[in-house]
Length: 71
Image 1 (tube, rainbow, N blue to C red):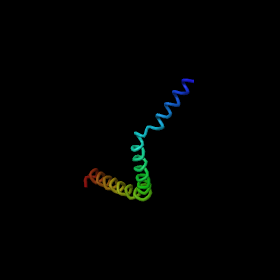
Image 2: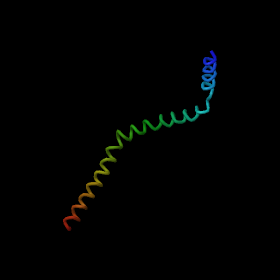
Image 3: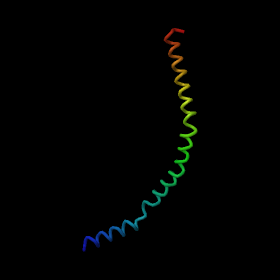
Image 4: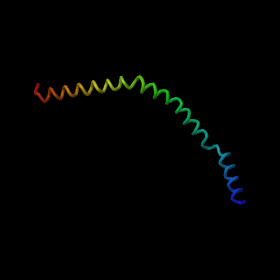
């Protein structure tokens, strides 16, 4: 019976403890803002970023080929 009373007291203490509530709420708000931004960037921004880097790689390859051929 003592174990049950100890467990009940522990649950009451844990349930009444709100020290981490502000941090958790802040994380949830940041996540709620960041998730749509990430979805937008992945859906619309990623193709533009990928094209930008692919163009840079193509320019680098052309420069490398030109240097190798001695032009």
